Length: 182
Image 1 (spheres, rainbow, N blue to C red):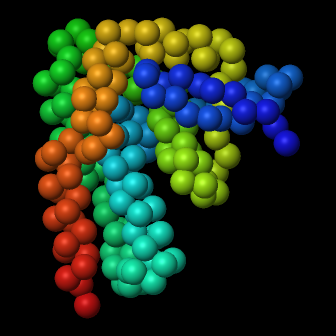
Image 2 (image 1 turned 180 degrees about the vertical axis):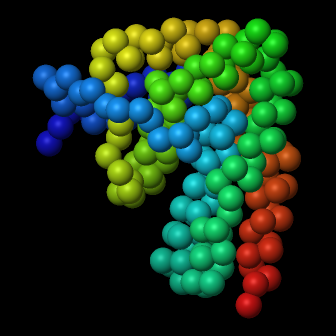
């Protein structure tokens, strides 16, 4: 078994497996993960999907409902989280945050956030975590210590683990549409 190492993501953290002596060089990150607002949107949609999947396993949701939820566009909440960035960050901080989250390291960090959602629920993620080299972690730490990262983390902390209210309303609407399907 590989040892667990804590990787900081702003004030949030996630566990990633790290081979103690491995130096891993990964290719470009999956473009689906680029952008903070896309990462947050994908995370929101994945949370809905995992929740309904759990309900399905417990017999509390139907297979057609689950299949409908699985078809929710992963970017369905991107505009909401883009507005959060604009509300919370200065224009310079927003440009800095976007540059980071559009980078390969930012996209790979977004993949770790998704991986952590599965891990935190005791589920097996569909892919192995995309590990950082020491140099890449150092580059990520520059962002993690930035005013932009701190402000975005503070805004998410302010919500006490709840969704942005507009995102919650949209999630309820999307889920209601799926429930109403035959």
